[in-house]
Length: 435
Image (tube, one colour):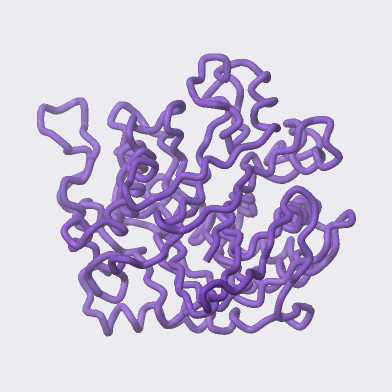
């Protein structure tokens, strides 16, 4: 039986292990205090607010960071984090300490609950180059579709097996996973995950077409569509309790719209992974088809506060995504785009190559990709719900004369084998929201 068609009790039992792990992670590690009041440098922002009209207001910094904390084998991330001397992980931790978000999504963090505590204790709770430690008493991690065998030949190369035939590309189950860290309590009992939602169950899905046939949208067989999941990793609705308010942190990491052929199977999937959130925060008519991993239907309750975050792998004007992929969110009537920017991104456009033909403002870029193609792009987003007050935003991308430039640096595959960069090819993005 396909997981998306199991009954709610069966799905709940199937997720028991993940939720038990999550509950354990909600307790602060021995080195973590209940809060962190250090806010330094350019990322400084007010945390506690004044009382107005009997209501307590505070500014909360939401952030997303594709930190490239993925490894080539299962268990390797935990092994790297078991000691405090992994240079790349230390740079990731320092970047987070410089930005100092209150609620953070980490993309490309391999699924391994043990690695979460190791990262908090050995890296985030340790000062780096004068950056104050940062403590996150609450965390959420759950399984990812990456590396999970589908049993089908999804890339139509005549063989079954490997990353391209998994439900989401990955060399092992959970590679390129996700992690949420928070200074505010996570309502783990109310988290909704959508790992098993089937792509074919999205009305009007942009299913890929085999250009070698006359039939439409036929890249995948009916048998494959009966199993194929929409999310290349997962989609999570993580409720964060901020005082008496609940803010839904809607997080995901859609597949890159590349590494495919004329059928554009990854480009169309990227489009629909992004569309999922656009429908989820829309009205009941647009969200009624959605079901979560416990079998509950419907989207976000009208009037709920939310922040959509993640590496969406889509730029509004440049790159390989379908033309309107990210515009489904940026132009959504319930979404606010604060347009976070940086001087470093604007400076990096001088790298040339594909950047010379880009239409977008390079100050909005969030990723330093190969210059020949696709060039630097805006792909990482933090998008609050309309009606909330945005107090600031930014992209952590220092210019080359900035003392912190070593955290982003220049591409150097000799010094940084594997990634070629000291931290990640993505930049941390943040938005301050007043509640």
